[in-house]
Image (cartoon, rainbow, N blue to C red):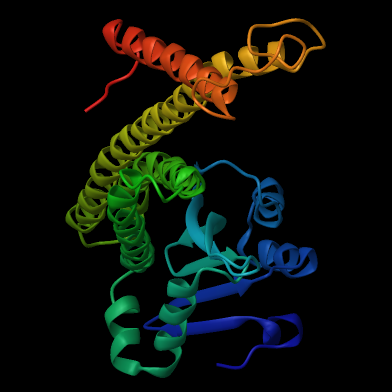
Length: 324
């Protein structure tokens, strides 16, 4: 089981002639030397070191090279957010090499189980590299399903908040839209790659692997179905929240506008009586006293109330406000 020199730094599991090498946070020197040993193409070696490659399958005589993307959580931020993680795979007749950045927890756990548990090692690695590849993709797709269920749960939580005037959910809706978009960008290429790999990996296995990969494909189709439904739902919530927010804003502006309008009569009349000019009941012409000392003020208040009532009746008649 022991390797020499640079190979001692690799994490390796062997079973029945099949070797699985898992490389986390790869270095150029490590991948280059591994490429020399297994005759990997230098362009594929470069692709392993890059984090921005698109999903693809490259076919060679003695192996295939696969790049897949899977969602993973970013723990650096206070809130868990989804982001891409690239998985590069070299699969041959008697070996399988996985290269990633160490953030695919299901893959790491699966590799650790194969190291520690003889029964599970035989289950995953007792048939062929093609079956092991299927098992790896299946585990990661199942983890993708768990992430999707969390998104669906958050979507259900937002449903009631959307119709609550006292709660603002614009940010939550935007974050969910981003997560759904991230998952869709992962799943659509994944479906295509799995269909392509089903044909290419068969040459390294005596057993027909079509049924196994078709099962993974069915899981991916379910994910796509739920994603499409979630995308439509979140768009409805977005439009609903926008319409309700707009309606609420319009109501507030309408109330403020009416209050301002109703204050116009008292403002105008009060302004006139505050001027240094002769007005009925003013100081210059002598205040009215037939209702007592405050007769002028009473008359002014009654006039402003009458003007306000007239305006209210008019607004109600034209349907601008509703009273009662």
